[in-house]
Amino acid sequence: YKRITVKSLVEMKQNHEKISMLTAYDYTMAKIVDGAGVDVILVGDSASNVMAGHETTLPITLDQMIYHASSVVRATERALVVVDLPFGSYQSDPKEALRSAIRIMKESGGHAVKMEGGKEVKESIKRILNAGIPVMGHLGLTPQSIYKFGTYTVRAKEEEEAQRLKDDALMLEKAGCFALVLEKIPAKLAEEVAKSVSIPVIGIGAGNGVDGQVLVLHDMIGMTYEFQPRFLRRYMNLYDDMTTAISQYVDDVKTVDFPSDSEQY
Ligand code: KIV
Ligand code: NA
Image 1 (cartoon, rainbow, N blue to C red):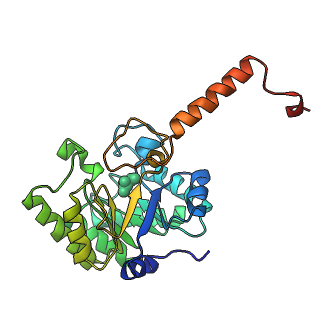
Image 2 (cartoon, rainbow, N blue to C red):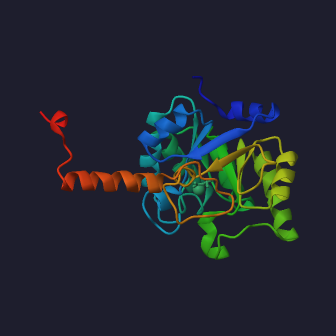
Image 3 (cartoon, rainbow, N blue to C red):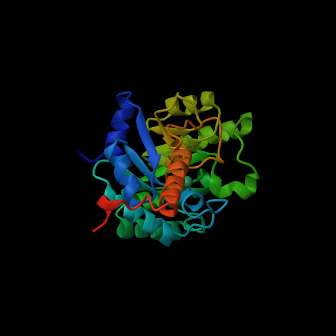
């Protein structure tokens, strides 16, 4: 396998080849995701919810993101590994943002960083790019700002917010981001943005007029079940399958069906 690079992603957009992206947070899962041919693995700060059980993405730390990312990097041969800069690691000033991005690159071996926001983070993005670190943008629903918005509902339905999002997308392209995530916005707006920029636009709840799709791995394989947004397609029901398997194990232990004669020394 040849490693996917930020250049290959831009070429995929030019060739109208859609980009597949999924999250992963650990070695074993990342190995499966990489082997199955996913183009981009996102070590998302959704690890805060999925791995640690927090209600929001805010509590996860830079050290914890580096631990997840280094595990994922060790598992991948082909996918580009993008790592979320967590809340609090880049908002204070561009120097702090650069220091955090450098720590991710040095200590995890990830290939790029992602950060949420538009013009508020422009100087930080430029500073990180100047150090040679590729940056992916993230607009629309930005979970690190959840307490500012109060809800996880669809974003940019009103003209003013839609215009701001379009301006921010152009700014991110001009600043030098290699790609951009659009989360939970109207499909028509997302398609318009994808057509207006030359960098790939990866959508989650943003319709099919964009250049690629991303989902949270544990949601798409049905390991989680509380989360049921319209945009989520479940490809498996692992929550049910694992519950059945594990209850069977409990049963087998209780009834001394396990281990059998052939399963002992
Ligand atoms: O953290 C994450 O999983 C993300 C994706 C939903 C884009 O940022
Ligand atoms: Na994220």
